[in-house]
Length: 143
Length: 388
Ligand SMILES: [Zn+2]
Image (cartoon, rainbow over all chains, first blue to last red; front, top):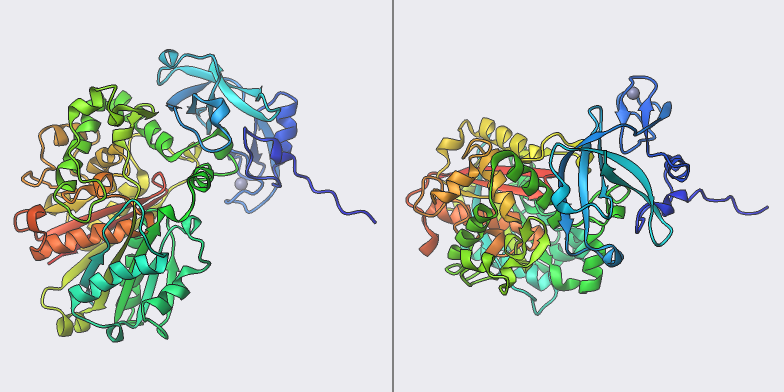
């Protein structure tokens, strides 16, 4: 009998992924189909982003995927002039947090948006992005 | 509840590259504290060893330290909460002594940042966050604090010059602290001089001058029961309050971006336990890993209203002669930040202040001192209140 195959889809997340196996690996498959997604607990209705496999209130794994669509408000951001090992090729880049009301999303500002165009409170939207090295992440674009 | 005292404090010099092994580095702070307390290893019945383990090659450092410090066969504990490890260690020591389990506990914090190569250090930096959901975007410590600076500037009109003023203050005292790694004056002009290294961009709006100095170092705090303190020590300093709290690592899980919620909660807990308020504090050490961190500390500790931190530094109220002197030993910015040793070094500064033994850095006759020590980007908050 062959070895059981390991579901290591999460290796594809971001410029450098530090995680291979997780019980929310469908997040990657959803990215591949163009959707940024979180999980919602079927017991208490909490929306989790980043997605979780387990609800800490209900102690269940009974979750439904939801789409991070519509607009979020830019809460804060910073542009990096230095990056960690493996990210040098991406520099300079900006990281940011968007507030969607029920949840917040941490991620990157899309390349091509000038920092001067960023204003706290502005509406932005999260979109799937393929990186030059073939990896997948999501970026924030102007709404 | 029985009273718990600090009967001895010590630290090594904070240096760029310590020319010895990690256990030898730890011994320097430990020896300094034993000499300060005029005690020997026989007086100590447990040790708490504190560091951020990603910098250590030694597996399970507590064991080898207990041996090298001469603390076999007493039990030892290992405590880690990133940059607040040794404040958390003192919190543990407090509970060990207060419960009656131990009489005198040595809390030894250390970090040899130069133990690993700069490439290894770069690699670890990439993991200094939520490695599943944040690190893949290329995050770094300065960028997280920079995001707080962006939000603080937007909401309260805080200016880069206000942050620079905090660095200028730190350097004023770093120059007179012979344990500090950075002994030179930093001026406002350096921040506006594109030729100056201080003005170099790191993560907007933070510049090189807004970031603390890396260093190798160790610290030690001897925590003892009232009975032991009365028997051994002429000038015990009492632990009046120990507050601690945590917050979500991932910024997506937070609600506050102009201050650190874990610091606010830790302060509330510590004030409540000590039965005092911010106005009763005569001297403070705060976690200025970045200038914005000290600005937020002013507000989270209640020394200023939210947004009022800039007026506090503009009016020099946090200088030695001001109404609430903060980091008059140079802080992390100039004294240096050997992660696991930092909290113990902050506590040492306050203990010396309360005993009136801080030399050129001495503030006038303080009765109550406070230590604010943060792990990660406000993921762990520790506030310790001490009194004579
Ligand atoms: Zn639930």
